[in-house]
Amino acid sequence: MRILRRTVCAFLAACWFLSLPAAAVEDAAASFDELAARYSARMEGREDAVALRAALEAEAVQADAFALWRSLFREGIAPREGASNALSLLNALLDGGDPARWESASGFFLPSFVPKPLAAADAVYASALFLLRMDEEGAAELAGMLFERLFDSPKGKYYLLSASTS
Image (cartoon, rainbow, N blue to C red; front, side):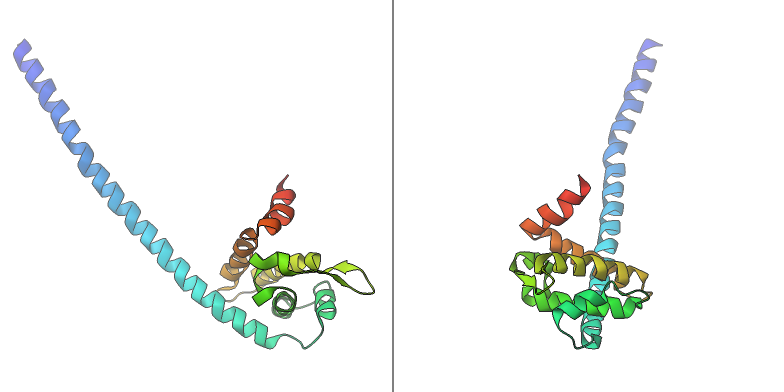
């Protein structure tokens, strides 16, 4: 009887041990498929975001950077107009309109003494808020992309993102 028990226990242990790799392989395949689907959806969202940014930049009002900055705080501004003006302000203040180059903004709007780096940060935050209010393909992805790029700026990350979470 002992031999039979040992044999059955050894058999069950072997079955359990051999079933582990199959389950792990299935889990890995499912995880890979899920990851591939997420990357595919993200790439499609980024394409929509790039197209939306180009359309919004083309719609921006023709004004100087200070007027664009002030328009971001105007009561009742439509989300599309606000996003358009914020992106245009980014283009006016930063090299290539890229938040990762936040350090390229310098100086002040005179005579108001508003620092241009602060206005560039306002443009990133305002554009994200306006974009999230829009019901268009790529709007949320574009808002996320702007913050990702700001996070790629060493000083922008420190002064504008890290400090706000403390």
